[in-house]
Length: 385
Picture 1 (cartoon, helix red, strand yellow):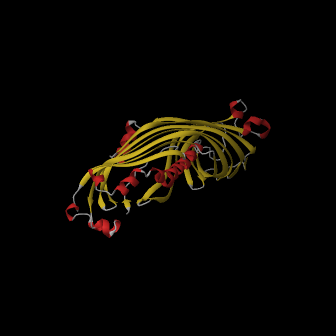
Picture 2 (picture 1 turned 120 degrees about the vertical axis):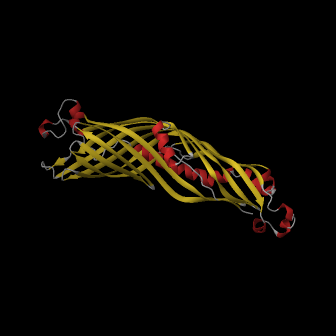
């Protein structure tokens, strides 16, 4: 006997969902469920372990990887050079999509459930050269006038945002009127960079070596996210000898707090004044926890089907089903609930690459971070003084 569900399973994540302790439950109630063999009903009601091991844990790990990378990639540092000070803003997007997951448990199976993780983190950024801040002039001053503090740049970032604000909800509704989004995000942190090897310029703007710098940061992110997806469509399914449809809404609620301590080394080159490329590598220690509740519930309609009976039952058992029972539609409710709490992953290794376009006092920066299969891009603009 086979249990096949072809569903659109809507999962949206803007932050950290680490792997850890999770509870899962699937229940079927109502007249529709009474036409199912007792063995199928029992398997549906005890599907939690299979869902956790084969699906939920894998999805939570995927989401966690995306969230941690977005927290690390929050400072819009570019090649790591600050002459006096900079102010700006940027948006970080991180995510990955792995192969769909098939869950099999005894005679039941869920086909092609998505395995996707994503994270979004807007930030305001401020950077200052400590030598200039202490009255020693800009960092590009003559070498004999520089102090040791000119080797240090301090980067600050932070943001607080409510997803339920009017413009955001309107933007969501313009894409899909069935989605309701709520919650808030708070980010903040700093990075202190030290130039191990100072930058070098040819003096006429044709070429500049950004030097080699090391940064140590402390990044914090707290998120409360509430999403409701009211899917008015129904999905077809097969439950052993019965076929039918399943409709309903999906709700997603989670809260998370994550702190990352990234360390990285980066360098870069500027050519013809306008164009800079930079690259680097680093590692981060991460601390924090999160909680999750994800559920989908809705009306279920089922009817015994001759083809499904032949495919799922032995001839002896199929012969016991009266012909009058075929095609009679029964209704009920099918519910899926996932919930749990978890800790953030301990460490993350990553690579850095990006470009920066210089136009007078404006710097347009695209900074990418890659960690295994996760990609993150921060796009922003800074004014440099």
